[in-house]
Length: 220
Ligand code: SF4
Image (tube, rainbow, N blue to C red; front, side, top):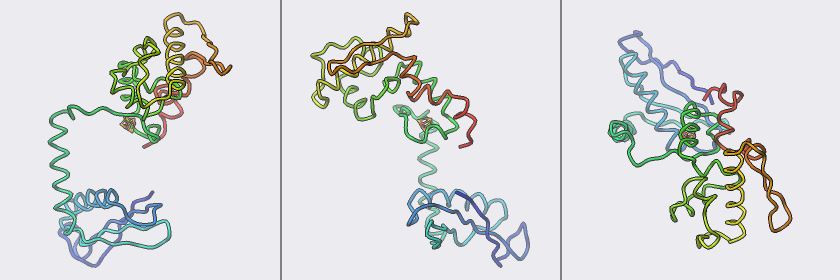
């Protein structure tokens, strides 16, 4: 995605008889609310820089079409969102927690989040345990790898198939055992497949993925 400034023949205090408007490129079929909020941020900053609030902001879509929006129409909404965000920021975002998502590898906070997940022994460290399963297990108070490893078979929550619960328990057990003994652990699954400890599987977990130097040198 690229951001451009378009020169328009409207005077501003910093530049004289011309000023700029913001144009952002998006690989989407229609402009989305988050695109407009993003444009509002840029237009607000640009307005402060050159002493005139831009009249329009534009999105150039993947189809090559352009959609334009009046800045004045959206700025009050943006300012409201900004006030709410600043208030939450001042409170330290109490009650929120970062959950791994696909784009974590491109995020500048990935190192911070990876450390936090490791400190918390977060369930995302368990290989092939997805977000829905984390929510289901979390409702039963199973929020850490070690807790899952020590869970009894009859703790299987309603939203999980017993076979899946068993696989996740075994996986957690293998990883916990491996990190405490340093030995590679393999356990047979009932279906005859093998489950491995962290030396094999953790390479694919979110925290490991985020720690890789290759990922962490990518710009957001
Ligand atoms: S690494 Fe970035 S995208 Fe992923 S959970 Fe943390 S803050 Fe969110």
